[in-house]
Image 1: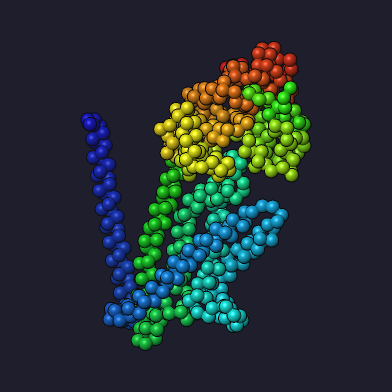
Image 2 (image 1 turned 45 degrees about the vertical axis):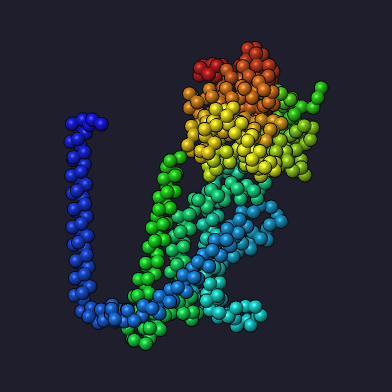
Length: 277
Length: 249
C-alpha cells in the first residue's frame, strides 16, 4: 500500500511523541520509587519496622501455616460465592414481583436487604457466630467456619441482590413489552429475556463484589476459624513478629489481582458492547 | 357477515389527565388490511398497544374473534398468542441470535419442538432473503434487516392478526423499501393486518381501508381513494395538506 509523504511524516511525528511519553513515564516512575524508598528507609523507626514486619526468616517459617489457612479462605470463598449468587438472584427476583399476593414476600425481601446492607459485617459475624449457637437449637451448626460463611452469605447476598436488581431495572421496558406481546408470561419473560441481559450488564459490578468478598473471607478469623489471618496471628503470637500478617496480606493481594483484572476486562467488554450499539 | 377478527368498541385510554384514546370503534375483518393514519400523538400507537393488551384500558372492549379479551378475567397471554405485533424500534432480543429470536415464542409459548420451530423460522428467513443471517446477533444487522426479523418473529406462530406500529419510522430512507415490500407481500397473501404508518403512498396502495385518527378519535374511515382523494372531514384535509407540503404523498 502506498502512503503519501504527508502521512509518513505524520506517522514519524506520532512515533516520536509516543517514544517521548514512554520515556517521561519511565523517569517519573523511577523518581517516585526512589523518593518513596528513601522516605521510608530513612525514617527513624525503619530498622525496627523492618525487623518486625519484613523479616524474611519469619516469613518463610510462617508461610506453610498461612497457606494452609488461605486454602480454607479459598474454600469458603467459592462455596459462599456460589450460594450468594443463587440467593441474591432469588431476592432480586422477589423484589421485582408485582401483584398483591406477593406483597409479604416483597416486603420481606426489602426488609432483609435494608437490614443486612446496614449492619456492619463484623457485627453480623459476631451475632451469627456467637449468638446463633448460644440459642442451642438442634440443627444449628457450631462450626465457626460454617457460621462465618453464613454471616458472609447474609451480608453479601443483600449487596449482590441490589446489583442484580439494578441490572433488571436497566433492561428497557420495550424488551418486556416485546416478550409479553409474544405471549410469554411474567416468569418466562424474566427468565428468558430480562435476566440474561441484566446479568451481562452487571458482570463487572459482580466481579467487583467478588474481589471484596475475597478479602472479607479473612474476617471469619474473628470467630476463631483458623484461616490465613488467624494462622498469621498464631505465628505472630509465637514469635512476637508481625511479618506473618504481611505474608497473609500479600497472599490476599495475589489472590485479588487476577479477579481485579478480570473485572476490568469485563467492564471494558461491556463498555465496548454499549459503544458498538 | 362473519365476525370480524378484531373489533374495538368504545376504547378509552388515559395517561393521568390526558385522554389519548377517546372512544374508538374499529373493526378489522379477515384478510383485511386496515391502515391508521394521523399526526404524531393522535393515538395510533396507543391503539395498537391497547389491542395487544400491553396497556390497561380505561373503558371499552377489545374483542378478538368474538371473545372480549380485554376482560380482566380473561388471560391476556392467551389473546397475545393469537396476535403478533411489530414495534417501531424493532425490540429484538439483543442476547439471542436471529434464529432464537424467531423461535422463542413457538418453543416457549406454543410448545413447538425446537427442530420444527427452526424449520419454520428458516423458511420465513429465506422468504425474506435473510437466510444467511440466522446465526447472527441482531446488532450485526442493518435496521431494515432487523425490522424484517422482527416481522418474522411476529409471524413465527401464525397469528390471526398482525399489528404493525410505524415499522418504517426508525429506518434510514433507503431501507424503508425492503420492509414495505415485505408488508405488501404479506397483505397479498391474505394476512389480516392493522397498521399505523406515516407512509401515505404505501397506505394508499396497500390498504383496504384507511382510518384517520385525530386527538384520540377516529374521525374518518373509508377506502383509501376516498380518504386520500375526497376526504370529507376538515381535519383530514388539513392533515393531508400538511403531508403533501412535506412531500410525503
